[in-house]
Image (tube, rainbow, N blue to C red; front, side, top):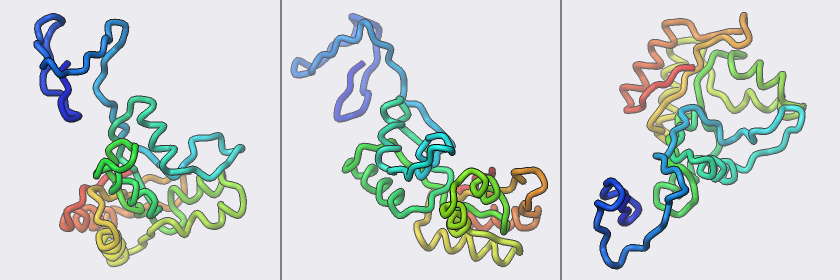
Length: 196
């Protein structure tokens, strides 16, 4: 495998590839070479610890942990923090150690819908009372359009997260009209909708 300026430029069977004289050779006879893995549902704001041992996450540490595990690209499935936006920008410029971060906005859900009930059940007080503030909600098509526009105006992520499911069963979920207008609005503004 020949790597030049951080990119694979040639791949051949052992003994076939002629590397430039100035190349640094790394013997990987005992190694396994894999492409970078992709995780398409990540929350950098979650510490990845058991709910009964809560601690506030450090977004850069969480991002670095993905790299350590071989994950080089992640879809941040709903982000709330300016730290995530800043880290994505720094990573894109090569100024931070992070996977390629694709953000999906703050996420749109119905009032009191997923992920609020689950998060309130798992998080200790006072975090459980603060968590609902981090989500955009819509109970009408007009509110949905405004929420999509607000996300686009704030950071225009490449993806737009929509919570459609009802978790736990019986909790509120978006009706089909709100889902449809959310998807259309996101596409109209150049964001790819992803639906939970």
